[in-house]
Image (cartoon, rainbow over all chains, first blue to last red; front, side, top):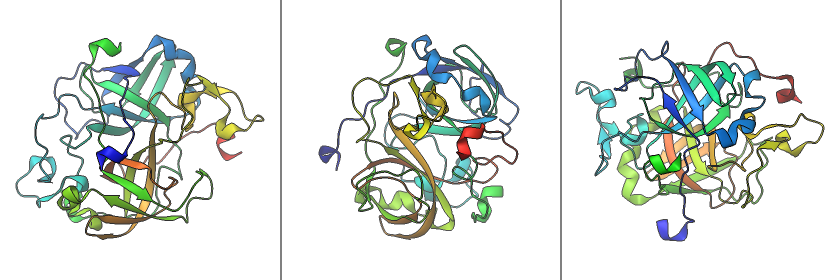
Length: 149
Length: 149
């Protein structure tokens, strides 16, 4: 399939300064981080400060390298069901893109201070999008029971 | 900045079959599309069918090529304010990753039928994530007035 498709190479637009050395996935709601955007892109942030929340796409560069396991236990917990990796948020995916909806505390020039980003120090950031309720959120959802385990 | 960072190359995990030749961004809620995942990854979808909604990351391969404009009018509307590209969802971004939260109608082997995906026929899909309310959604948000224009 890859042969039919265009080359898709990412460029970092910035980097996470969080001081965190290990991702937690849990209890990250209160973590405050700075996202330092490349200064050539400062102007491209104008207007973002009018949003209370943003979606950060980042590259989980410290995820396990090598072969991706098609089936995993969520959060590595053996007592949870063995699931396809796409049914989980495991960082060990074919494309190691992490996605987090976070609160934008403030923007100062090319620096975004955010709350709730579960990304370790030095994580490359690949996109920033405004969080738009109704487009990015869903009112009535169903999830499997293990989500709250 | 790019020199400090690891190479980040994406591999398509599947492709969109929507029959749509032009993205609309609006009025896409009712569009039904199939996402055909590479058959080597079928098993990696197991358990996804327990979620009512999923997040699809895709590569907007038909976005304008060449130089990215740092400032844009949202949805190309001249009457809306001129904003930094990261304050908008313009497809013409440094990394052309599209993100959509969609309803999962059904999964059949390696095919996901979804509702609400605004991606044209042949769009490469790069990740599928389960939509997790509370993690991916925010209760109280602020957005600028132009969003509803």
